[in-house]
Structure formats: structure tokens, C-alpha cells
Image (tube, rainbow, N blue to C red; front, top):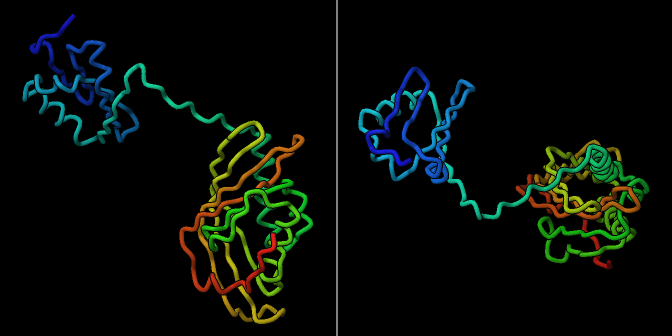
Length: 251
């Protein structure tokens, strides 16, 4: 049944809004979501082209009742034949526990310079992409695990005994790629101090990085392993580029 313009009216009582004269197909065209600051919600669906058919008195009534207490968010409902993306299936709780343990041991093995521990958590090959931190040379699509350990423990890099670090991981979003692949999007603050000698009393250089890291995780024989990283630097502090002596590129 088609509603006439006379039927397109509204009744305002307190905070309740009732709109008459709307057909079901009208609800496909526009969705007005009115979010109440008092933790309740009013949803009002209108055919956009028919707003003009409401009387000035009715429109004023709507405005008067809603404006003081709500925010208005406009969203369009897609046509019925539009393909919607399927949300990524979440990781299981058991996987979450294993993956967060990997996160911790990755950062803590760096900071403790515990290369044997790092060796136990890495996949046989790793995607290493430090181009966002260093330069274009710092990219390896499938670096062997032992080459990765050698690079990180190099005296010109994290293996320098005069360099103290803390890789502090913050909030994380988990992206499940498949049953055996997960990408972790991690907030990271990596603090670096180079000291003048092994008494660690005086800092020679300091450089702190603030980044969002993509970490790649791969399940091998039922066990999750760290399979690489891609940092995206937000900003650096102090003399970040001067903290490390530098390493050769033999991998």
C-alpha cells in the first residue's frame, strides 16, 4: 500500500519518535541511525526523496526532539545483490596463547641477546623486510633461519655488547590467513642506548623507534613459529641512525 503525503507524519512524545506511512521498500534506500547519549537508540528509516513531503511542523518536531540528545550517522544500505566481504575467521584461544608467547620471546631474546632462544622459535625461512627502517638492501623474501640469527647477533647490529635495547610490544590485531599462517599487526616501541663502555654508566648515543610491525607466523608440525617481519616506522627519536656500527650484506 502506497502512503499519501498526508499519511507521512510523525508523532513526538517525549524522546519517542513514531513515523507513519513508510513502505518496506523505503527502508532499503536510507538508514538514519540516531545514537542516544543516554545509552538507548532510536532507528528511523525514511525514503530520502520523501523527506520533503513531511510538514515543516513535523520536521521541526523531529529536530527539536532529537538534536539536543543525539548524534546523527548516515549510512547507505547496499543493494541486495551486492557481494559483502566475509570477515576473517578469528584465531583460536590456543593459537592466541602460542602466538603471544612467540611475540614475547621474539622481543625478549633480542633484548637479552639470547640467540639460542631466538633460534628455537623461528621458521626454517623468514621474510625479512627492514626497508621501512633501513634502506632497499634490507629485504629478503626467504632468508634461512641461521642467516637471520647471524644477522641479528652481528656485532654491528643487536649483537653489539655496548647496545642495550627494549622491544616493547603493545596492542595487537591478529589476521588469520589460513590454518597455518597468521599475520600479527603489533604496536612497537624499540628503545636503543649505546653506552661508552661495559660499565653502562654513560650513554654515547640513543635512538628510539616507534612503529607498527607486521609479524608473520607459520604453523609447522602443529607448532607456531616466527616467520618474519615488516616494520612500518611512525617516527624515530634522537640519533637512531647512529646507534649501530653497521653490518655487511652476505646473506
